[in-house]
Length: 375
Ligand SMILES: Nc1ncnc2c1ncn2[C@@H]1O[C@H](COP(=O)(O)OP(=O)(O)O)[C@@H](O)[C@H]1O
Ligand SMILES: [Mg+2]
Image (cartoon, rainbow, N blue to C red; front, side):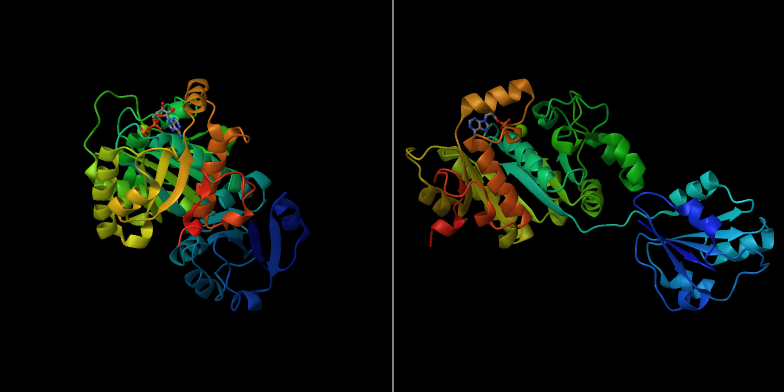
């Protein structure tokens, strides 16, 4: 984080502001009129010894976006404070300057710089195909790329099991987030999520027996919030909840999860058609889980029926999948199995990392990025 101090260099202020991980930059008043602070900066304006706000302050505050301002003054003079408030300065710290007081003011005005994160939705063509398994493990893989900046949201408004897969039983849930969608901020959201394995944040489904009605507008608000605060957000989407399926506008990619059973493939076809129409062809993709190369229905049949290329195949390894579930230890945390390799390939594909960078390259044709192998 950067603190810009406008005023004459001053050893006392320098000492008060010095902190690990913080850069302190000094600007003269003349420079302040022309140099625009960056989003996320805090600007400390030293007006000690003055009774009125200098003329450079108003243009400075009005031109800045997502910047916090703190005024240093000789005393808390009501006239000066009013002038400051009028131009958008919310904090004034008076002499004698105190480190704690100054830090508290800086913390209050710090604007968390919003980011333009990516959201990936996983939705099963049928129940039990392995959607949650895939969503949780892909989220863990993404969290390796962006620890503390990856979020998994279980959008099931009751009895979702993403938390169980991670061995977590959080106190708050996605329903609390949706109930308070209008007042979501960083601090409140932080109290609803748990930091789970692999430094992945989880917003879980509640234990409640009955789900409240889902509301697309609130889900949309939640997803926008997630995208502006996390680099990657992964969603475990309930396939039978149309309000959730209608709210995926912020999503970069919707991944339909299917297997090689006829009813599932048919359902995947219907779902793909609907999602393509709603979100555009390029945003919808298909993953086959529990893939059996000897099964009667092959990859070609699935692609024809669904009208989409199969982007990834996840091999079948029931014993490992169930063990991981029972131990609450996700597959991705164990590097040496083919399932983990498949999830890593999906994560890399979603995150835009070339699959040839993958350490799994060439370890088998059952998993990994198969898009390039065909046509
Ligand atoms: N690739 C896989 N191979 C074998 N079994 C799997 C695989 N993925 C998931 N499973 C198992 O299938 C069952 C359903 O998985 P789950 O992820 O809960 O599906 P869904 O979310 O689609 O209902 C679980 O017992 C899980 O361990
Ligand atoms: Mg599930």
